[in-house]
Image 1 (cartoon, helix red, strand yellow):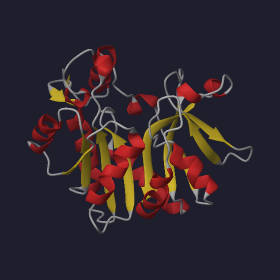
Image 2 (tube, one colour; image 1 turned 45 degrees about the horizontal axis):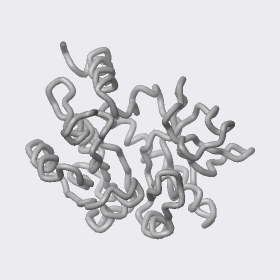
Image 3 (spheres, helix red, strand yellow; image 1 turned 90 degrees about the vertical axis):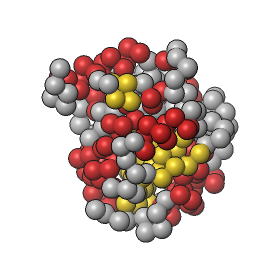
Image 4 (cartoon, helix red, strand yellow; image 1 turned 90 degrees about the horizontal axis):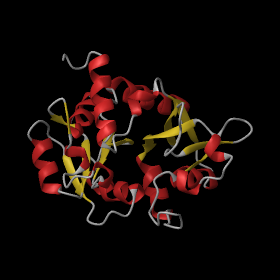
Length: 251
């Protein structure tokens, strides 16, 4: 296993669009809480070098995950955004970890192979941060990838802050990143909450990295279904159907 790699999984949110009192990542797909699928993929890449950021129903999320895997935990007491969540996790990372993959706990179709490909691409290019980008037929709700005229990654703009022309961009941020630990340590404290949601967006590390002269880039992923974020009961059903269709679950 790669001791220089660690993975942070963001799993602190309530998931109000589920219209349930249950923490979003605890909703079940084929009988298992969706967070367990994400942890499985992460373990395949980083072994026990995993930190789960918990918040809403933290004790129950810990109990569920600890029943199957040995991971570390960081507590995000207030939901101040994805950037803040990663800041909470940094002090918990294993000392030897030099590169950090950031995953969302509501993306149950992510595969270990994709995580490893992202890390390899990031290292081969010598970047400070690499975003997994995907071309989707309907980008509504996703952060848009903003590139310069020479196709270099310049920023990620969230839907709520995007202009009309930016909303037409179909290449989106999957919410999955690989970054050097030193880059995150330097850039995360520079985040601010001057946006529509008044949160510390992790996406802002790209523009801040560009401004700081750091190497930013993206890797284009495969089929968009792999990064499907589950935010509603309908999307929970879609994820279940995809798992069956892909042969991950025998119905």
